Amino acid sequence: MQTVLQERDDYPAANKSPRLARRFDAVMTGGTLGRIGSLEVRLARNDAEIAAVQEVRFRVFYGELGARRDALHSLEERDRDRFDALCDHLLVVDNALPGPDHRRIVGTYRLLRQESAAAAGGFYSDDEFELEKLVARHPGQRFLELGRSCVLKEYRSKRTIEILWQGLYAYINHHAIGVMTGCASFHGTEPAAHAEALSYLAHYCRTEPQWDVRAVAGRYRAMDMLPREAVNTRQAIAALPPLIKGYLRVGARIGDGCVVDHDFGTTDVFIVMPVAEIGARYLNYYGAEAERFAA
Image (tube, rainbow, N blue to C red; front, top):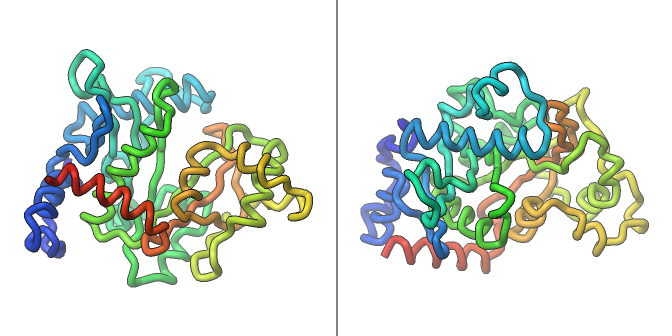
């Protein structure tokens, strides 16, 4: 996979510390980036693992959540598109399961770096949010788009999220990422069904002006359906999808407006997460875990 094995001459940390050099090598070669119990996180190493990731995504998005299938999806039983070949694929493997590695994948993230997005003609999220405008306002930052977050139902636990974050931490350090972005979803295509949670995001979790991103014209749906004083914050937080709660916990903020994705049957919001603004205790925690696997 060319994006995993690409040489990096602009990453000096690998020459300064044996530990950092080993972590650098692990990202480059698909080595282990974290482990909790029988779960291991790393990048996909080959086409067989990428195909297996697409099968896991199909099981969740189409089999469980009811995304709209076309003839190709039904024939292949894989969720794939033109971005997959340009992305790195972070995956969680359960080593307690039988079979080869590519049959033990239980979770994944698709990672699209800014330079790869340029080769693709833009980011995946550009169809829903004005991400390119944000990138243009911050020419000194390197952006990473997180997408296709997917964990099999029986593995949707705190430890699976934590191990994905261990892998992400190693990845963003290796590639000197400054800002993580991407869509996160509520299930269903009626924003009003999530009025309190969306209103909470609009009133309490919006980006600062310099990081603001707006839903594209023609697809913009307002999130502030309830006034601030009508939002029961405890109820609203409880109603947030776990992934969005996890993003907010580490310091992410939310863009302006939501978008209905009829193909996937979701209502999407936009996550903006400058790495420098991630809470120090989370950076220290995930950094310590990453160092443990570089030892």
